[in-house]
Image 1: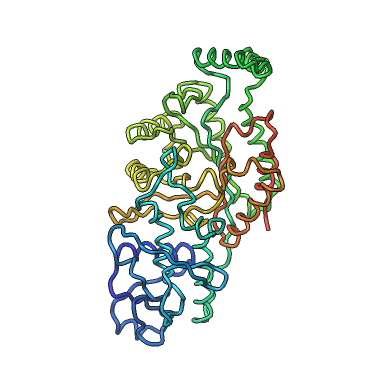
Image 2: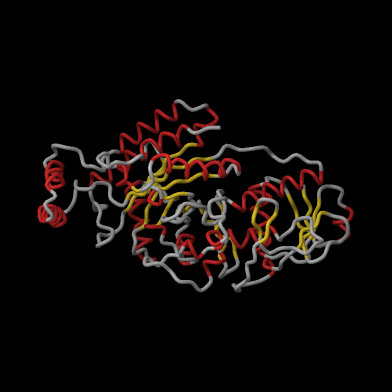
Length: 437
């Protein structure tokens, strides 16, 4: 056990120390403010504060973890060997920066609470993040800091930390519409046919007619192909990897509008397909674009009614999360996991970590039960590249997730699986499912 001396315990300290020591380093620890107890303790120990107590392992405190509420902190970048750091420490510190305050700042998405210019969809802009501005968006920086912290602790205290776990590779498929043409309402069907004819899109028109006459399959109806690829890939993996390769389908069950204009949740075919897919892989709910509190609750109720299971996995359309409002709504609904943390237009680690983490509400200064699973890549951000370019981006981010033994999560849209499209998506998925070091 590691004994940690602090002058005063705060919710922020409890949150970030528990995340780092218990979940990442897997080291039992306890806090103390009793100097006599700290001096008498003969095991590994460190102090965290403004000044060291003696010759113990000392980490200087910037002070962020003692604060309450939001303040605009100046972020000045420095280097710790090959890694960028901020909240730099004075000379007398065994680490060159306050690793706990910096990790808290990144993990809680502190900067997303500050005044900001949003994009057209009301989202935080990737280019406004310190990760993008200081060129570390493509690495799980927090994870790499903690690996180095573990190495420092091993050297100082002659201990051996738990060894590497298996990296989880999660392929999440965001399903805005289960079909492209099939099972649509009459008005949207005629509107779509008229639009194809008016634009002289003859092939598209004939394809639509073929689907409606049940002569050809709907372009999006490739679920059995994806499930077959998954089963065949898993069957060939070593036993220790079979449960670390996952597919997660997230289904839209919102009301019809000009953006969310997919197949109605009332469709029996849709409902049966959801149940069929749930027999083989994990499923969850993709909230609609206009995701107000009343709509979120309504869509969650539909999901549980259709699937006969509690809602545990969610994401919001277009990763439209506004800190902390959306996550607070999920906490109130008892949702356990959310997969919306990422950028749809640029690859990278939005929270600078490949590991899941509990949402910390900076408004109320409390850790919540909601677990956030950040994704590294939305396929929309790389689909315009050739296969080699796509693979290079995936390999780079996946290698870092593997070093950190975290999660590598990639998001796909259901329409990208259309076999008529010139896409590398099936090649990418097969490689991800088969990946092992």
